[in-house]
Length: 227
Image (cartoon, rainbow, N blue to C red; front, side):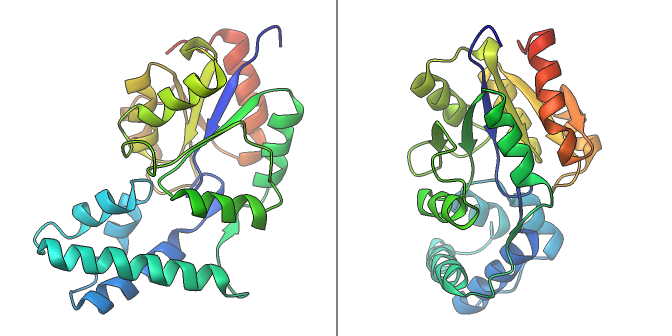
């Protein structure tokens, strides 16, 4: 590469197979707050948003006190699950190799996720990716997706312009965030939102298999990544 380029990656649904775990935690949190469970489909659709916004989307008719109860209970259960050796969350097969290939190719790497910062730290430690990411953006210091803040912060931190930045994600929130930030958006087919919705949200390319991601990214930058 003649110029430095930035590849920003979503976590849940893109690198991490966490759907069933998130559904479980949300159901436990709803039980603790004494309100009905959302459907599994509804919970799956809000993965990627900040936790606060996700709870607002899932429980619009509940009181602010009930939603606060869900929020607190979700955080407690998430921490308990992370401490459990049997924690079922896992990387998608091939994700570690794909990220390593991107890193070895010389790209700057970033994370833009609905997870809190401590969730990202757990991810990097658990999957031996400590020090792999040049910028990490979370709702702790940015607005929730699809606001462009996470991407804008990542570009500001690394000094990489929009024309050399790509966002990779599995939801319309990721692709709308990319569009709002004026960067190239790449969708993945194995996550939480169907391909047809990713295409409508403005995905410039759909990756069908995770092992293809490094080559897709190389092609994007060869062709020019300006959205």
